[in-house]
Length: 463
Image: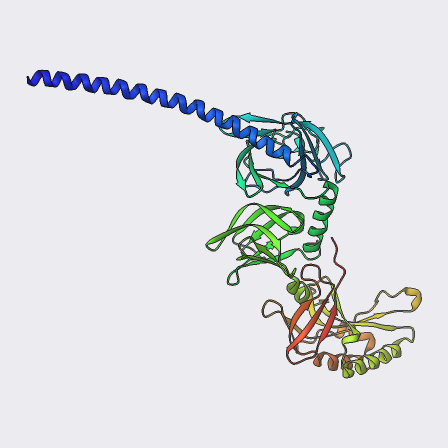
Protein backbone atom coordinates (compact mmCIF):
# COMPACT_ATOMS: atom_id res chain seq x y z
CA UNK A 1 0.00 0.00 0.00
CA UNK A 2 2.80 2.38 0.92
CA UNK A 3 4.57 1.73 -2.43
CA UNK A 4 1.36 2.25 -4.38
CA UNK A 5 0.78 5.55 -2.58
CA UNK A 6 4.28 6.69 -3.54
CA UNK A 7 3.61 5.68 -7.14
CA UNK A 8 0.34 7.62 -7.27
CA UNK A 9 2.01 10.71 -5.78
CA UNK A 10 4.85 10.50 -8.30
CA UNK A 11 2.43 10.27 -11.23
CA UNK A 12 0.44 13.20 -9.91
CA UNK A 13 3.62 15.27 -9.50
CA UNK A 14 4.74 14.48 -13.03
CA UNK A 15 1.31 15.26 -14.42
CA UNK A 16 1.17 18.53 -12.49
CA UNK A 17 4.60 19.51 -13.83
CA UNK A 18 3.55 18.82 -17.42
CA UNK A 19 0.29 20.67 -16.89
CA UNK A 20 1.99 23.65 -15.34
CA UNK A 21 4.57 23.67 -18.09
CA UNK A 22 1.88 23.60 -20.74
CA UNK A 23 -0.04 26.39 -19.04
CA UNK A 24 3.13 28.44 -18.68
CA UNK A 25 3.93 28.11 -22.38
CA UNK A 26 0.41 28.93 -23.41
CA UNK A 27 0.30 32.05 -21.20
CA UNK A 28 3.70 33.23 -22.45
CA UNK A 29 2.60 32.74 -26.05
CA UNK A 30 -0.63 34.64 -25.48
CA UNK A 31 1.23 37.41 -23.63
CA UNK A 32 3.68 37.87 -26.51
CA UNK A 33 0.88 38.07 -29.00
CA UNK A 34 -1.01 40.50 -26.80
CA UNK A 35 2.04 42.69 -26.12
CA UNK A 36 2.90 42.88 -29.80
CA UNK A 37 -0.67 43.81 -30.63
CA UNK A 38 -0.69 46.42 -27.90
CA UNK A 39 2.44 48.06 -29.39
CA UNK A 40 0.76 48.10 -32.82
CA UNK A 41 -2.31 49.77 -31.35
CA UNK A 42 -0.19 52.17 -29.32
CA UNK A 43 1.84 53.12 -32.41
CA UNK A 44 -1.37 53.75 -34.32
CA UNK A 45 -2.70 55.96 -31.52
CA UNK A 46 0.59 57.85 -31.24
CA UNK A 47 0.70 58.44 -35.00
CA UNK A 48 -2.91 59.65 -34.89
CA UNK A 49 -1.97 62.08 -32.14
CA UNK A 50 0.98 63.41 -34.15
CA UNK A 51 -1.22 63.84 -37.24
CA UNK A 52 -4.16 65.40 -35.37
CA UNK A 53 -1.97 68.19 -33.95
CA UNK A 54 -0.67 68.77 -37.48
CA UNK A 55 -4.13 69.00 -39.11
CA UNK A 56 -7.29 71.11 -39.12
CA UNK A 57 -5.57 74.44 -38.61
CA UNK A 58 -3.27 73.25 -35.85
CA UNK A 59 0.40 74.20 -35.99
CA UNK A 60 2.05 70.85 -35.45
CA UNK A 61 4.77 70.24 -32.91
CA UNK A 62 7.62 72.04 -31.21
CA UNK A 63 10.45 69.51 -30.95
CA UNK A 64 12.97 70.30 -28.21
CA UNK A 65 15.90 68.26 -29.44
CA UNK A 66 19.14 67.39 -27.64
CA UNK A 67 22.17 65.48 -28.87
CA UNK A 68 25.22 63.87 -27.25
CA UNK A 69 23.44 61.76 -24.66
CA UNK A 70 22.78 62.60 -21.04
CA UNK A 71 26.33 62.90 -19.68
CA UNK A 72 27.98 65.11 -22.30
CA UNK A 73 27.03 68.65 -23.32
CA UNK A 74 29.04 69.62 -26.37
CA UNK A 75 26.09 71.19 -28.19
CA UNK A 76 23.19 73.39 -27.18
CA UNK A 77 19.60 72.20 -27.40
CA UNK A 78 17.79 72.82 -30.68
CA UNK A 79 14.30 73.97 -31.57
CA UNK A 80 12.73 72.03 -34.44
CA UNK A 81 9.15 72.21 -35.68
CA UNK A 82 7.29 69.21 -37.09
CA UNK A 83 4.11 68.49 -39.03
CA UNK A 84 3.02 64.87 -39.62
CA UNK A 85 0.76 63.50 -42.36
CA UNK A 86 -1.20 60.26 -42.29
CA UNK A 87 0.57 59.21 -45.51
CA UNK A 88 3.89 59.00 -43.66
CA UNK A 89 5.28 62.32 -44.80
CA UNK A 90 6.75 64.72 -42.28
CA UNK A 91 7.78 68.34 -42.68
CA UNK A 92 10.47 69.59 -40.30
CA UNK A 93 11.66 73.18 -39.93
CA UNK A 94 14.30 75.10 -38.00
CA UNK A 95 16.84 77.89 -38.23
CA UNK A 96 19.60 76.12 -36.29
CA UNK A 97 23.26 76.79 -37.01
CA UNK A 98 24.06 73.35 -38.44
CA UNK A 99 21.79 73.57 -41.46
CA UNK A 100 23.85 72.93 -44.57
CA UNK A 101 23.97 74.26 -48.13
CA UNK A 102 24.25 77.86 -46.97
CA UNK A 103 21.12 77.68 -44.79
CA UNK A 104 22.80 77.90 -41.36
CA UNK A 105 20.80 80.28 -39.20
CA UNK A 106 18.07 80.65 -41.85
CA UNK A 107 14.53 79.38 -41.59
CA UNK A 108 14.42 76.12 -43.55
CA UNK A 109 11.75 73.48 -44.16
CA UNK A 110 12.47 69.94 -45.35
CA UNK A 111 10.10 67.08 -46.23
CA UNK A 112 10.91 63.42 -45.61
CA UNK A 113 9.21 60.30 -44.27
CA UNK A 114 8.56 58.82 -40.85
CA UNK A 115 7.43 55.42 -39.61
CA UNK A 116 6.23 53.93 -36.36
CA UNK A 117 8.43 50.91 -35.58
CA UNK A 118 7.54 48.00 -33.32
CA UNK A 119 10.66 47.17 -31.35
CA UNK A 120 10.95 46.65 -27.59
CA UNK A 121 8.52 49.53 -27.41
CA UNK A 122 7.07 52.18 -29.72
CA UNK A 123 9.72 53.93 -31.86
CA UNK A 124 9.20 57.00 -34.03
CA UNK A 125 11.70 56.67 -36.89
CA UNK A 126 12.61 59.46 -39.29
CA UNK A 127 13.78 56.91 -41.81
CA UNK A 128 14.80 59.05 -44.79
CA UNK A 129 17.20 61.98 -44.99
CA UNK A 130 15.87 65.29 -43.73
CA UNK A 131 18.07 68.40 -43.98
CA UNK A 132 16.73 69.75 -40.68
CA UNK A 133 17.15 66.62 -38.54
CA UNK A 134 19.55 64.12 -40.08
CA UNK A 135 22.59 66.39 -39.71
CA UNK A 136 22.50 65.58 -35.99
CA UNK A 137 22.73 61.83 -36.62
CA UNK A 138 25.10 62.09 -39.59
CA UNK A 139 28.62 60.68 -38.88
CA UNK A 140 30.14 63.77 -40.47
CA UNK A 141 31.98 66.23 -38.25
CA UNK A 142 29.49 69.14 -38.08
CA UNK A 143 32.33 71.67 -38.41
CA UNK A 144 33.65 70.06 -41.61
CA UNK A 145 30.68 68.28 -43.18
CA UNK A 146 30.15 67.19 -45.81
CA UNK A 147 33.89 66.96 -46.52
CA UNK A 148 35.24 64.90 -43.64
CA UNK A 149 34.21 62.00 -41.45
CA UNK A 150 35.21 62.12 -37.80
CA UNK A 151 37.37 59.30 -36.48
CA UNK A 152 34.68 57.73 -34.33
CA UNK A 153 32.02 58.14 -36.99
CA UNK A 154 29.53 59.61 -34.53
CA UNK A 155 29.28 63.22 -35.66
CA UNK A 156 27.10 65.08 -33.17
CA UNK A 157 25.82 61.94 -31.41
CA UNK A 158 22.24 62.66 -32.34
CA UNK A 159 19.40 60.26 -33.13
CA UNK A 160 16.68 60.06 -35.75
CA UNK A 161 15.02 57.01 -34.18
CA UNK A 162 13.17 58.10 -31.06
CA UNK A 163 11.95 55.68 -28.39
CA UNK A 164 8.68 56.68 -26.74
CA UNK A 165 9.11 57.07 -22.97
CA UNK A 166 5.86 58.63 -21.80
CA UNK A 167 3.41 61.50 -21.74
CA UNK A 168 3.67 64.65 -19.66
CA UNK A 169 0.27 66.23 -20.02
CA UNK A 170 -0.04 67.05 -23.71
CA UNK A 171 3.73 66.71 -24.19
CA UNK A 172 5.18 63.54 -25.71
CA UNK A 173 8.51 62.33 -24.36
CA UNK A 174 11.12 60.38 -26.31
CA UNK A 175 14.77 59.46 -25.98
CA UNK A 176 17.31 58.87 -28.71
CA UNK A 177 17.58 55.17 -29.49
CA UNK A 178 21.41 55.13 -29.60
CA UNK A 179 22.56 58.07 -27.52
CA UNK A 180 19.63 58.44 -25.10
CA UNK A 181 19.26 62.23 -25.25
CA UNK A 182 15.82 63.48 -24.30
CA UNK A 183 13.53 64.78 -27.04
CA UNK A 184 10.26 66.47 -26.12
CA UNK A 185 7.30 67.14 -28.43
CA UNK A 186 5.11 70.09 -27.42
CA UNK A 187 1.97 71.23 -29.28
CA UNK A 188 2.75 74.43 -31.19
CA UNK A 189 0.22 77.24 -30.87
CA UNK A 190 1.40 79.64 -33.58
CA UNK A 191 2.98 79.78 -37.07
CA UNK A 192 6.47 78.32 -37.07
CA UNK A 193 8.47 81.37 -38.09
CA UNK A 194 6.61 83.37 -35.47
CA UNK A 195 7.44 80.77 -32.83
CA UNK A 196 11.16 80.85 -33.69
CA UNK A 197 11.13 84.65 -33.60
CA UNK A 198 9.40 84.59 -30.21
CA UNK A 199 11.97 82.13 -28.85
CA UNK A 200 14.79 84.40 -30.06
CA UNK A 201 13.14 87.39 -28.35
CA UNK A 202 12.66 85.43 -25.13
CA UNK A 203 16.28 84.32 -25.10
CA UNK A 204 17.41 87.88 -25.77
CA UNK A 205 15.32 89.12 -22.85
CA UNK A 206 16.97 86.82 -20.29
CA UNK A 207 20.60 86.44 -21.37
CA UNK A 208 23.34 88.20 -23.29
CA UNK A 209 27.09 88.05 -23.83
CA UNK A 210 27.53 91.12 -21.61
CA UNK A 211 25.69 89.76 -18.57
CA UNK A 212 26.19 86.00 -18.70
CA UNK A 213 26.62 84.73 -15.14
CA UNK A 214 23.80 83.64 -12.82
CA UNK A 215 23.04 82.65 -9.27
CA UNK A 216 21.19 79.36 -8.72
CA UNK A 217 19.63 79.44 -5.27
CA UNK A 218 16.96 77.84 -3.11
CA UNK A 219 17.06 80.80 -0.75
CA UNK A 220 19.62 79.12 1.50
CA UNK A 221 22.44 77.71 -0.60
CA UNK A 222 23.84 79.06 -3.86
CA UNK A 223 25.45 77.58 -6.96
CA UNK A 224 26.39 79.40 -10.14
CA UNK A 225 25.90 79.26 -13.91
CA UNK A 226 28.54 80.65 -16.23
CA UNK A 227 27.85 81.06 -19.95
CA UNK A 228 24.09 80.52 -20.30
CA UNK A 229 23.92 82.67 -23.43
CA UNK A 230 25.82 80.02 -25.36
CA UNK A 231 23.27 77.31 -24.66
CA UNK A 232 26.17 75.20 -23.35
CA UNK A 233 27.27 76.35 -19.92
CA UNK A 234 28.97 75.38 -16.67
CA UNK A 235 27.06 74.77 -13.45
CA UNK A 236 29.50 75.09 -10.54
CA UNK A 237 29.87 75.58 -6.82
CA UNK A 238 31.94 78.75 -7.20
CA UNK A 239 33.07 80.97 -10.05
CA UNK A 240 36.80 80.91 -9.31
CA UNK A 241 38.59 77.54 -9.21
CA UNK A 242 35.40 75.51 -8.70
CA UNK A 243 35.60 72.17 -6.94
CA UNK A 244 32.40 71.00 -8.59
CA UNK A 245 31.61 71.86 -12.21
CA UNK A 246 29.07 70.24 -14.52
CA UNK A 247 28.68 71.00 -18.20
CA UNK A 248 25.05 71.36 -19.25
CA UNK A 249 23.10 72.42 -22.29
CA UNK A 250 19.66 73.93 -22.65
CA UNK A 251 17.02 74.72 -25.21
CA UNK A 252 15.21 78.05 -24.98
CA UNK A 253 11.43 78.44 -25.26
CA UNK A 254 9.08 81.41 -25.43
CA UNK A 255 8.94 81.67 -21.64
CA UNK A 256 12.19 80.19 -20.33
CA UNK A 257 14.43 77.20 -20.93
CA UNK A 258 14.78 73.45 -20.39
CA UNK A 259 18.01 71.65 -19.45
CA UNK A 260 19.17 68.49 -21.18
CA UNK A 261 18.90 66.58 -17.90
CA UNK A 262 17.80 66.97 -14.31
CA UNK A 263 20.42 68.47 -12.02
CA UNK A 264 20.60 67.95 -8.25
CA UNK A 265 20.58 70.85 -5.83
CA UNK A 266 20.53 69.94 -2.16
CA UNK A 267 17.84 67.33 -1.74
CA UNK A 268 15.90 68.20 -4.90
CA UNK A 269 16.61 68.60 -8.60
CA UNK A 270 15.67 70.99 -11.36
CA UNK A 271 15.30 70.85 -15.12
CA UNK A 272 12.74 73.29 -16.51
CA UNK A 273 12.56 77.04 -15.85
CA UNK A 274 10.14 79.81 -16.74
CA UNK A 275 10.45 83.55 -16.28
CA UNK A 276 8.79 84.71 -13.06
CA UNK A 277 5.64 86.85 -13.39
CA UNK A 278 7.56 89.96 -12.27
CA UNK A 279 10.36 89.14 -14.79
CA UNK A 280 13.08 89.29 -12.14
CA UNK A 281 14.27 85.66 -12.30
CA UNK A 282 13.77 82.18 -13.70
CA UNK A 283 11.79 79.73 -11.54
CA UNK A 284 11.83 75.93 -11.54
CA UNK A 285 8.52 74.15 -12.06
CA UNK A 286 7.99 73.75 -8.31
CA UNK A 287 9.18 77.30 -7.59
CA UNK A 288 11.86 76.08 -5.19
CA UNK A 289 14.90 76.95 -7.33
CA UNK A 290 15.63 80.41 -8.72
CA UNK A 291 18.09 81.54 -11.39
CA UNK A 292 19.01 85.22 -11.01
CA UNK A 293 21.30 87.15 -13.32
CA UNK A 294 24.38 88.52 -11.55
CA UNK A 295 23.53 92.10 -12.40
CA UNK A 296 24.66 93.12 -8.90
CA UNK A 297 28.12 91.60 -9.44
CA UNK A 298 28.23 93.10 -12.92
CA UNK A 299 27.56 96.58 -11.53
CA UNK A 300 29.65 96.35 -8.37
CA UNK A 301 32.71 94.48 -9.62
CA UNK A 302 32.98 94.87 -13.40
CA UNK A 303 36.34 96.02 -14.76
CA UNK A 304 34.99 96.49 -18.28
CA UNK A 305 32.71 99.48 -17.87
CA UNK A 306 32.38 102.81 -16.12
CA UNK A 307 28.88 103.71 -14.96
CA UNK A 308 27.80 107.27 -15.52
CA UNK A 309 26.03 109.03 -12.67
CA UNK A 310 22.84 110.50 -14.09
CA UNK A 311 23.05 114.26 -13.53
CA UNK A 312 19.30 114.34 -12.99
CA UNK A 313 19.89 112.45 -9.72
CA UNK A 314 22.47 114.96 -8.37
CA UNK A 315 21.63 116.65 -5.10
CA UNK A 316 21.98 120.46 -5.12
CA UNK A 317 25.35 120.06 -3.39
CA UNK A 318 26.54 117.56 -6.00
CA UNK A 319 25.30 119.74 -8.86
CA UNK A 320 27.29 122.68 -7.45
CA UNK A 321 30.43 120.54 -7.15
CA UNK A 322 30.00 119.33 -10.73
CA UNK A 323 29.75 122.90 -12.05
CA UNK A 324 32.95 123.81 -10.20
CA UNK A 325 34.71 120.73 -11.64
CA UNK A 326 33.80 121.84 -15.16
CA UNK A 327 35.45 125.20 -14.52
CA UNK A 328 38.60 123.54 -13.09
CA UNK A 329 38.95 121.32 -16.18
CA UNK A 330 38.90 124.38 -18.45
CA UNK A 331 41.78 125.93 -16.49
CA UNK A 332 44.04 123.31 -18.09
CA UNK A 333 42.66 123.84 -21.60
CA UNK A 334 39.68 125.97 -22.51
CA UNK A 335 38.71 123.36 -25.13
CA UNK A 336 38.46 120.56 -22.57
CA UNK A 337 35.03 119.45 -21.37
CA UNK A 338 34.00 117.47 -18.32
CA UNK A 339 31.72 114.98 -20.04
CA UNK A 340 30.49 113.06 -16.98
CA UNK A 341 31.23 111.59 -13.59
CA UNK A 342 31.30 107.82 -13.39
CA UNK A 343 31.88 105.12 -10.81
CA UNK A 344 33.71 101.89 -11.52
CA UNK A 345 37.20 100.50 -11.69
CA UNK A 346 40.08 101.85 -13.69
CA UNK A 347 43.44 100.25 -14.45
CA UNK A 348 46.35 101.70 -12.48
CA UNK A 349 50.02 100.77 -12.72
CA UNK A 350 51.54 99.79 -9.39
CA UNK A 351 55.08 100.43 -8.12
CA UNK A 352 56.09 96.91 -9.17
CA UNK A 353 54.86 97.50 -12.71
CA UNK A 354 51.71 95.39 -12.39
CA UNK A 355 48.26 96.68 -13.27
CA UNK A 356 45.31 96.51 -10.92
CA UNK A 357 41.80 97.84 -11.26
CA UNK A 358 41.22 100.51 -8.64
CA UNK A 359 37.64 101.45 -7.65
CA UNK A 360 36.74 105.10 -7.52
CA UNK A 361 34.94 108.14 -8.89
CA UNK A 362 36.22 108.83 -12.38
CA UNK A 363 35.86 112.13 -14.20
CA UNK A 364 35.59 111.62 -17.97
CA UNK A 365 37.20 114.54 -19.83
CA UNK A 366 37.23 114.87 -23.58
CA UNK A 367 39.45 117.13 -25.63
CA UNK A 368 38.69 119.77 -28.26
CA UNK A 369 35.52 119.22 -30.28
CA UNK A 370 37.52 118.20 -33.33
CA UNK A 371 38.64 115.16 -31.31
CA UNK A 372 35.04 114.10 -30.74
CA UNK A 373 33.33 113.39 -27.44
CA UNK A 374 35.27 110.25 -26.62
CA UNK A 375 36.94 110.92 -23.26
CA UNK A 376 40.69 111.38 -23.50
CA UNK A 377 41.51 111.71 -19.81
CA UNK A 378 40.22 109.94 -16.71
CA UNK A 379 41.26 111.80 -13.55
CA UNK A 380 39.84 109.95 -10.55
CA UNK A 381 39.86 109.62 -6.80
CA UNK A 382 39.67 106.33 -4.92
CA UNK A 383 36.76 104.98 -2.96
CA UNK A 384 35.83 101.49 -1.82
CA UNK A 385 33.08 99.73 -3.75
CA UNK A 386 31.80 96.62 -1.98
CA UNK A 387 28.95 94.15 -2.55
CA UNK A 388 28.31 92.79 0.96
CA UNK A 389 25.25 90.76 -0.11
CA UNK A 390 22.95 90.18 -3.05
CA UNK A 391 21.48 93.40 -4.44
CA UNK A 392 23.40 95.63 -2.02
CA UNK A 393 26.27 97.98 -2.84
CA UNK A 394 28.36 100.04 -0.43
CA UNK A 395 30.49 103.09 -1.19
CA UNK A 396 33.08 103.96 1.42
CA UNK A 397 36.31 105.81 2.05
CA UNK A 398 39.41 104.20 0.57
CA UNK A 399 42.56 103.65 2.61
CA UNK A 400 44.76 104.18 -0.47
CA UNK A 401 45.33 107.02 -2.89
CA UNK A 402 46.47 105.75 -6.26
CA UNK A 403 44.99 108.51 -8.37
CA UNK A 404 48.06 110.72 -8.78
CA UNK A 405 48.93 109.39 -12.26
CA UNK A 406 45.61 110.36 -13.75
CA UNK A 407 45.46 113.65 -11.85
CA UNK A 408 48.94 114.86 -12.79
CA UNK A 409 47.83 117.14 -15.62
CA UNK A 410 45.24 118.71 -13.28
CA UNK A 411 47.68 119.33 -10.40
CA UNK A 412 47.35 123.08 -10.80
CA UNK A 413 43.61 122.94 -10.29
CA UNK A 414 41.16 122.19 -7.49
CA UNK A 415 39.71 119.20 -9.39
CA UNK A 416 40.98 116.50 -7.02
CA UNK A 417 39.59 118.22 -3.92
CA UNK A 418 36.21 118.71 -5.58
CA UNK A 419 36.13 115.04 -6.64
CA UNK A 420 36.93 114.00 -3.07
CA UNK A 421 34.06 116.11 -1.78
CA UNK A 422 31.72 114.54 -4.34
CA UNK A 423 32.85 111.04 -3.36
CA UNK A 424 32.20 111.78 0.31
CA UNK A 425 28.60 112.68 -0.59
CA UNK A 426 28.19 109.15 -2.02
CA UNK A 427 29.38 107.22 1.01
CA UNK A 428 26.65 104.86 2.19
CA UNK A 429 24.93 101.52 1.66
CA UNK A 430 22.36 101.19 -1.11
CA UNK A 431 19.75 98.76 -2.36
CA UNK A 432 20.32 98.28 -6.10
CA UNK A 433 17.15 98.36 -8.22
CA UNK A 434 17.85 97.74 -11.93
CA UNK A 435 15.36 98.81 -14.58
CA UNK A 436 15.63 95.27 -16.02
CA UNK A 437 16.82 92.29 -14.00
CA UNK A 438 18.34 90.43 -16.96
CA UNK A 439 19.41 93.26 -19.31
CA UNK A 440 19.72 96.40 -17.16
CA UNK A 441 20.52 99.74 -18.79
CA UNK A 442 20.33 101.69 -15.57
CA UNK A 443 20.18 101.02 -11.85
CA UNK A 444 18.77 103.16 -9.06
CA UNK A 445 20.67 103.07 -5.78
CA UNK A 446 18.19 103.43 -2.93
CA UNK A 447 19.91 104.49 0.34
CA UNK A 448 19.72 102.07 3.25
CA UNK A 449 22.28 103.92 5.37
CA UNK A 450 23.54 107.35 4.32
CA UNK A 451 23.54 108.85 0.85
CA UNK A 452 20.72 109.85 -1.46
CA UNK A 453 19.09 108.26 -4.49
CA UNK A 454 21.73 107.75 -7.18
CA UNK A 455 20.98 106.64 -10.75
CA UNK A 456 23.76 104.92 -12.70
CA UNK A 457 23.57 104.63 -16.48
CA UNK A 458 25.00 101.27 -17.53
CA UNK A 459 26.87 100.24 -20.64
CA UNK A 460 24.87 99.00 -23.61
CA UNK A 461 24.10 95.29 -23.32
CA UNK A 462 25.52 93.28 -26.20
CA UNK A 463 24.08 90.02 -27.44
